[in-house]
Image 1 (tube, rainbow, N blue to C red):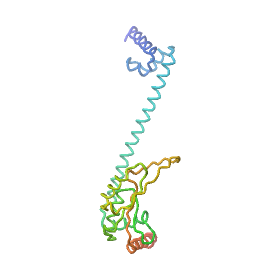
Image 2: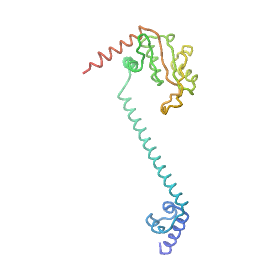
Image 3: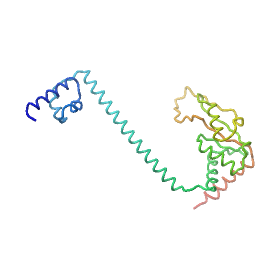
Image 4: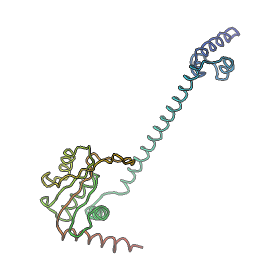
Length: 231
């Protein structure tokens, strides 16, 4: 490109700069380096409005770049988590009846009612509730007629919807549910609840002292003799 071609590009770049365009925006219209644009336009003074626009665009660009980086990081984390889950599933292998038996004892040891004769377990995770209702029936031989359900849910959520949900999941009839406990929202509290369970916390309950004591005996045998003494 000759002298006059370069001069024409320089004049065009300066005109665009006077209109308030950034060096990057000018480079999109004129194929020259940033150093060249900077040298051609360094003596051009922008208005306060133009400076404000460029600053806002810069901040927006930085924010957008951060959002893109965050999303990329999130996608990598999700992919890595999926890979770990798949590997864990392979490591676990097939789950047999004894595995389910021991898993139920462990769940009850952590979440179950320990008071003498007061059988049951509470949790917000539908998978755990579904597993344990089957466990109580299979290993404790608790009939459906002996089960009772109870819901603990925050104010403002749909208690009737939650009742229908848990009844369908557990197959416990709604007329075997205790009165739902509605937890009032603390207006003056500064604590922010991160986890709000749409269907609340569900409690499986049954009254059978001997069966509850048997479960406690299993826990004692497992934790006292089978696990804690392993060297």
